Amino acid sequence: MITIKSAEEVGKMRKAGALLHQVLEELQKLVEPGVTTAYIDQIAEKLIRDAGAIPSSKGYEGFPGSICASVNDEVVHGFPRNKPLREGDLLSIDCTLILDGWQSDSAVSVAVGKADAETERLIRVTEECFWKGLEKARAGNRIGDISAAVQQHAEKNGYGVIRELCGHGIGREMHEDPSVPNFGTAGRGVRLRPGMVFTIEPMISQGRYQTYIDDNGWTFITRDHSRCSHYEHTLVVTTGDPEILSYPGAALRRFPE
Image 1 (cartoon, rainbow, N blue to C red):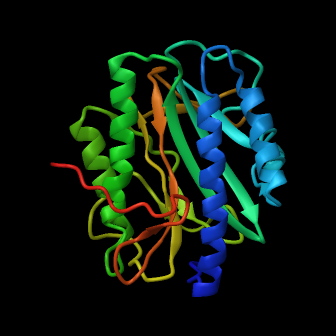
Image 2: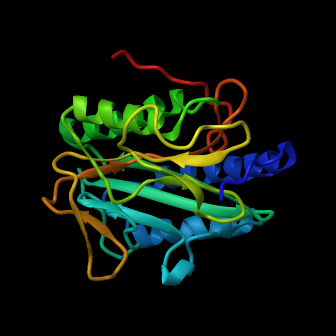
């Protein structure tokens, strides 16, 4: 069931999103060759708890980390670990927190040190896919309008769109209705209404979109072991432009076709 958030509830989610944005900004500063994702995870938990919030993923159905730390061909749900990052790696950090009972969810992908041009391009296009989808997150449009916009931009650039995972509603729970796929047909799906809060999170691979799950039971990996980039924000549908709750003050960005 899709819940429409009140102005008061959106205000609380806005505060959670602002904190999450601050946390991710700090975590990105730590990313460099030789650093471990276990260390980044420790800092994430400290930042979140020191601010009076709770890391949502810590212990969620047994997940061990306060962040998902996915490297290179890992799509999502990578375990933080003690293996040092290497020059040129691609790291995706996905973080969710609870502040005053309300969740916020966001992810960013960054190059470790100096990466090759193709990795940098993948990161850039994945972020562009988010903004393409966000343009369609307007009252009266449908979920499929978002999905189609993400898919078209990714495939136009020669990339694969991960099918098994998608954006989602969010509120008091980490995962709520509706699902927001990164592929689909415009004009189909749930009609958007003001007060709907959900994430848009393109997961885009350099190669094919097929994945498998690691032996740990959590981490999705591209079947052809091509690199994957992930970018995500929590947003609310309004009577005008959508508001990104996990990116305070951000205005819509538009890219040429």
